[in-house]
Amino acid sequence: MRQWLEQFNRMYAVWMQGRYGKDELNQFLLLVSLVPIVISLFFPKVLYVALIPAGFALYRWYSKDFAKRRKERDTYIRMFEDVAQWLKVQHRKWEDRKTHRYFTCEQCKAVFRVPKGKGNIEVTCPKCGDKKIRKS
Image (tube, rainbow, N blue to C red; front, side, top):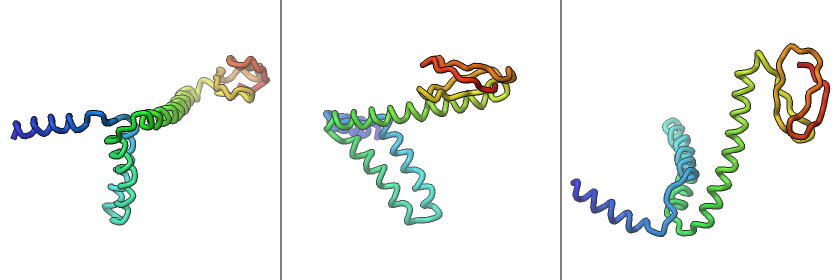
């Protein structure tokens, strides 16, 4: 059995040469396809919905068009970084909710914090220098 698995791994490696393989987007698509699979335990027709992201992940995995796959991956990474940054700010706001107040600059949309309980203060955006009077 072990010899057969080693031979299979060699054959698979030869077949995968020149193909894109797995990346973060493929992993995400496969995880997304698990949700309809779990739901299909209660509603069997939902299982077909799982085939869409799983099929696209397999298509990307075995594709030979590296340029398009990299472009798709880069787009996914950019979107994921934006979401991750937003979640990081929300987590920080929650942790600092008793000691600090957060403001968003109206000019450049930068997020910054000031200590609570200082009354009306002039806040200056660290990015663009815009000044406003705000209650902390």
